[in-house]
Length: 83
Image 1 (cartoon, rainbow, N blue to C red):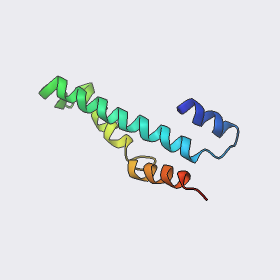
Image 2 (cartoon, one colour):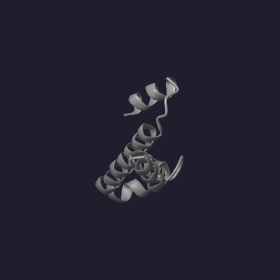
Image 3 (spheres, rainbow, N blue to C red):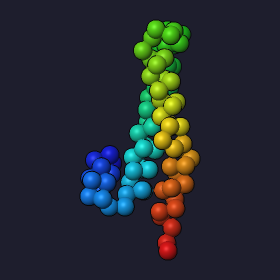
Image 4 (cartoon, helix red, strand yellow):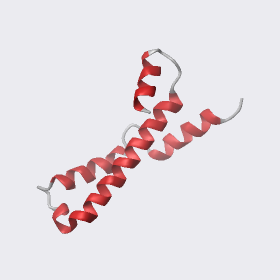
């Protein structure tokens, strides 16, 4: 998805839907993976010096920065409406 969105953007083609889909999928996947990592590592993952704690924070931020997941869903839905 990322490569398709990037190639459309490089070709100066309208690619709002593709970019939103790639961002939504990547950020939601990152959040899910880091949440599972936190569960696997248990209390050790909550320590400030643990890499997993930083990954978890970054995973949470990824669903907010650059447009929240809900905004991405709204953009995708708008591009799917018939004119």
